[in-house]
Length: 84
Image 1 (tube, helix red, strand yellow):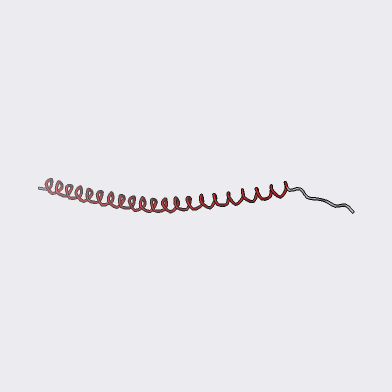
Image 2 (tube, rainbow, N blue to C red):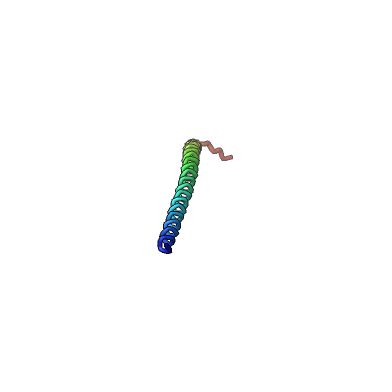
């Protein structure tokens, strides 16, 4: 009878251990899914920021090119110098 009791206790411990293992695995997967969702949202925000910065960069490049063109046109103009 003592052997049977030990066997039953072992089965109960094994069952509890298996339940704990499944619970921990589920918690771990839930944390991973939550983290993946957060990373995905952050990635989306960063992509949007990159797009905005690329547009700003293009605009600034156009302004710079216009300034360079204006400056080179002014330098190319001839001026008359009068000496008295």
